[in-house]
Image 1: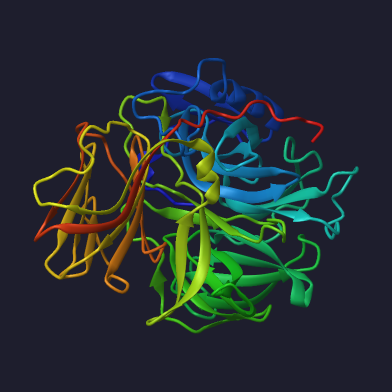
Image 2: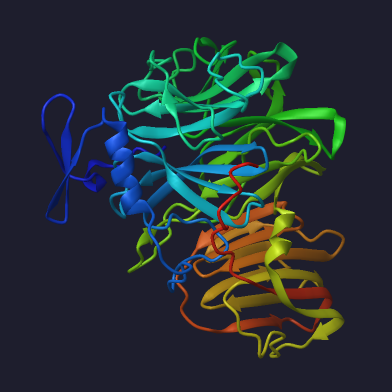
Length: 497
């Protein structure tokens, strides 16, 4: 959860111990943080509503946005009974940051999202900052009431500390734990909770503003047997906000497991975690080098037969002038660890489900593109999945222009540039592979199967779509341009599922 400057907070005036009023554009809207029911009903009125598929000029068509108003950090990413849950930081009353609730959406395929009513609203423990959700399969918490597996949310109550809520109906309604906060530490925040099988305990990675052991900003690790009582284990410095912690096999080898600890900006370490402390085996590394990538989180409880580590981030700082919504998420990506000449590195690549919205395809194989020629002449579409596989000579340079966004590569320097941000990406055996996802206001670039990731937002400035080269003919092994179909909100899910 980003702590924003006071200048962006919605003005408020105190109305006694438990009430306050938000002043928005001359209107006063009463809000009582202890009255969850009234607040939830009022928030839902602002949030939902009838109408056609969201198709405004700057509305992303295959990236998640709230129907209305402000959105930031993805929260509580969890999978249960065929549904991917996406909770998110949300201001249901305005287009700017403030008045943090947990918004909620579900999907059966990570592509088509159905937005549900507000999950968590402010209460006596403050507004609802970021956190995570787990499936408590063994009912270690004792919260289960009925046949459904209980979902348990750990989140930060602003000004109070780490709190617990639980749901016995697949996330449709939530009950606060009566002894909140369970960790009364503030401004420490953004708890990410996982089940650590080797030690049979819950582990929390918590952003700590000033570690008692490190003396710096970083991540504290806590343990619990029941999700309610927590013990501090260790700390690691050098991270800021929205931590994550998870294991991954190296090169898909289940006998070669490494752990990753990740901060909100995508900086990560690879190493070992024994249930008590993290031992780094790498330097601090960047996961994404674009201009709009923050507050990452990965999914909990993905079934073993799937086994993917799926990540979503907030594309912080995008602009959407005149729109009823503000901000968007990245497209879901699968993370993997691979051995490189520099050591073990994390790769990031779009989930395979994007094929569900694939439309018309344009393909070229084993051809040569001459300087001054535009390979994409005559193609016009605003939603694209572009695959590029080219053979490079040292003096080659090529330039991709999409609706005012520019991506270029210089073979002599090995520099990849996307919307002004730069990354080193040397060819592999003389070849370069790029994948680019284009939505109405975003460009997500993946180099050499995800070795480099660059996520950026933009405002379209033209309808141009071109691929040109300099320094001699460009040998194309294969290029495919896939026109994507919009992914409207999913139809109502079967409540008996």
